[in-house]
Amino acid sequence: MGSKERIDGYDEKIIRTLSENARSPLRDIGRQVKLSASSVRNRMERLLDRGIIERYTVDVNWRKMGYDIQVLLQISSWAGASREIYDKLLDYEAKDERAFHVTQVYRTSGPANVICIVRAKSMEDLASFITGELETLRGIERVDSMFLMPVPDH
Image 1 (tube, rainbow, N blue to C red):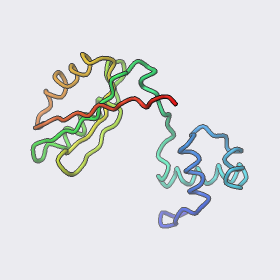
Image 2: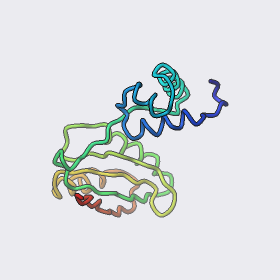
Image 3: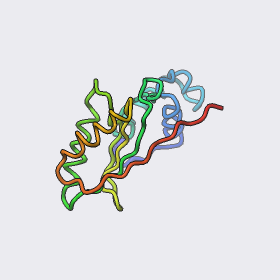
């Protein structure tokens, strides 16, 4: 499958199925998309080789892990500083064993140059991240926060 080749309906169905559950057995995916398990495996390998599927991941319930504070931070920076801030926040994303986690980082256009999602165990931990970590980054002009509310149980 060359880089110019398009994905077809089978590939899209496989991607949708994996998006819902990345641990789906090949046999189950094959039944859903009406292909053999070996055909599904070959297609998945091609999608990986082409970079369409970048990785398989897990959807974590951070609140059940004790990270009850979840906040979206919109960060405005000086001209030319957004890339450095973005890279620094990506470094935080990779670090473990903290009372806070930066779980997603995006460069954006508009009033904010960078948006990130931070998960913290307490308000003190979140304040420590914002005042102790973010305030040390060169180029940050403004930080706006939006707390992510828990989804009510049905």
